[in-house]
Length: 349
Image 1 (cartoon, rainbow, N blue to C red):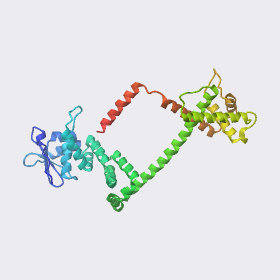
Image 2 (cartoon, rainbow, N blue to C red):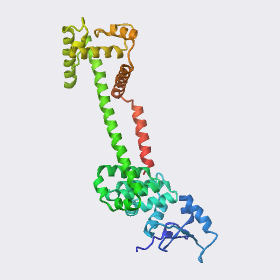
Image 3 (tube, helix red, strand yellow):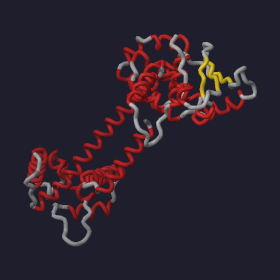
Image 4 (cartoon, one colour):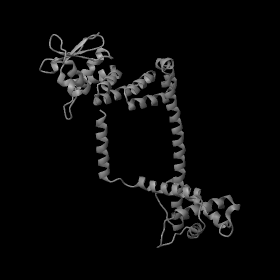
């Protein structure tokens, strides 16, 4: 076993606490450092002062983890960087090596002794080194230590490579001793698949509403005689299709008889009706799209069903969202968002 760390050299005064691990190893430490880092250790030190060992040091027992992991935990408490402090490259390498070797134990100790900054760091370290063979074990640790980010990382890894997870020893052990964990993981994956399907359907429907919104804007430009030299090939193709559809509607007799007999006339009539529903021209210059005012007056007089109202609402919303997405973001908003993102990233270091 590797020798335990001696933290006496990190403080000028002698160590007044003796940390005893599960295998009986003793690590001298300083009560001021431990009490400042952890409220749980502070209470343990206060209780331990009632009974002292022969050399006058209080005995604090940190059990449930290997002595090397406890030594790494204490070193993190001693070597915590203050805001604005200089970075020591060698110390950073040591901390990264300790986080990689004792990540799960550090997470459990930080959770048990209420050291939130170390808990976030250990959680991020375990999640960064996660492998499919250890996903079930890490998921159990995350559930016990209230580590939602690690729990989510385990679920995502299982969703990507469930075959490797099912071949792992942790999965077989859970099947023998913790079937609820297996059921919970399978339920998470099932729920994730359902959400993914629902999101795909929603994205597809939003794409259709955006296309209808763009078609309404193109109708305005077509009948207003506007042309755009910088239009994309896709927009040019849609414009030509709408122009052909409107020409067919005019020549097929859509103005004089009901368009129900011709599928293309029926499609053109529905587009004109939708345009009349979303057209927001009020007073001033009238809309140049044919039948717009007539269809609008007819719908106001006769009313429309709930399905049509829902379609109009979603197309209008898609038009508003498209306009918001294409507008220029002010510089002050960009700076504010960058400042917020940097602060948020610093919280989880």
